[in-house]
Image 1 (cartoon, rainbow, N blue to C red):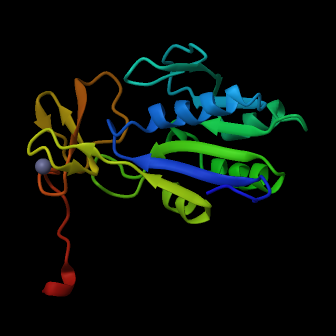
Image 2 (cartoon, rainbow, N blue to C red):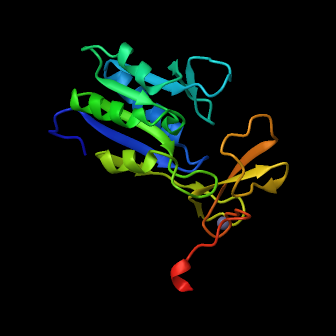
Image 3 (tube, rainbow, N blue to C red):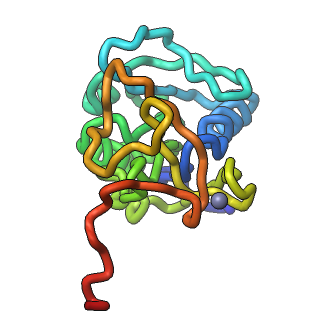
Length: 200
Ligand SMILES: [Zn+2]
């Protein structure tokens, strides 16, 4: 799909948790490493989780990365020798990430990012819709629903053994938080505000 195209574009790997987004990002990065492309990989550091300068997939594949707190930090690492910029879990960065991806792609850099398309409520995750609209290539991966084993497009959040409520904050530090992949049918969000007002 990239034949005869001048380099400089955005590709987004998206979907719910457990779909293999990071795995796919690492696969693309490794392939480019074999081709001796000059690559920078970035990863947002959330809160004070320890910084390990590595992107690791659920399958324990890994690649070295630069930990960043703000999207604008990317710029100071990018020089004229950089061919590819990869960003894992981009949804955890600030919204400026979108403009930075655009800037890099306009400079002729291949930008590969992975990120959740929805939050645990099943709603679009912050700036991801904008990034998906601006990207040249979008790969939407699905996981497998833990309940019914059909393709899963949502991330179920579970707090202390129960489905998380609609109004629980997106980042709840210190809670017994866990996540599962679920399909549209099996995804549960208690207290979700009334929808389909057009039916009333
Ligand atoms: Zn299901």
